[in-house]
Image 1 (cartoon, rainbow, N blue to C red):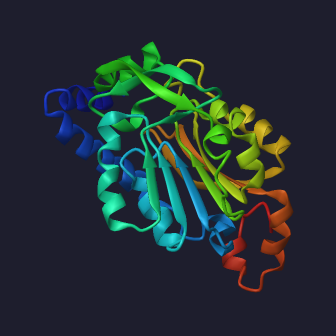
Image 2 (image 1 turned 135 degrees about the vertical axis):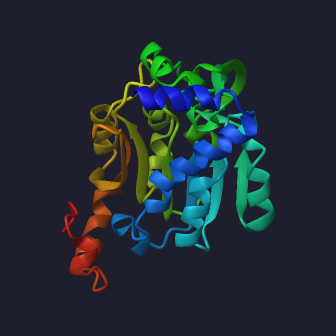
Length: 268
């Protein structure tokens, strides 16, 4: 932990741009770049729509587009600093739509904690004292007012393709996104949710709460596509994959679902 504090303090001595570049690179090396392209079976589904909630600079959008090249992507990012980077993807990709909005439990203006030195940590929730003590560069944040809507409200009048994949990574506020998006989640085939184990945010959602919410909506937890640990081996966070239970039979029966693809999966 001492080394983390030293590194964190050093980040505050360099430019915001360079700090975000360095930490984004390290984060991708630890997690996003390690995603298995099969996504625990999701890659075999005919996904036509991807909803990326908490898109940041588009890291997951790029990965998911490589797996589902023909899918339409809707990316949501409330951080002004990160949102500006999504324009680059919009120029490269067809059927890519991005919105400077937060998705939550209600339609309102809300306080948002925008982290200067690492925009990926920006959240609707305040960081804990312990988190700021261990990672001093995360204490450098501005409270801004942003627009929030719900997943259901945003897509209420849009005719979405039914083959939907939803990714939720909103730094501890994943439960309120789910509570405000039950209709759209009910239409989706699968959902990827970041789960924080480390107590980084006040009142952050835990795995049990998210598991229970999605189970009620007919999802089954099938495993994780990454797991990031601290130097002492304790888990910091992971991306959990949930698949609508009614679609799991197609994975069991699919001839291309080989032993290697299905090993250790909950749907084997």
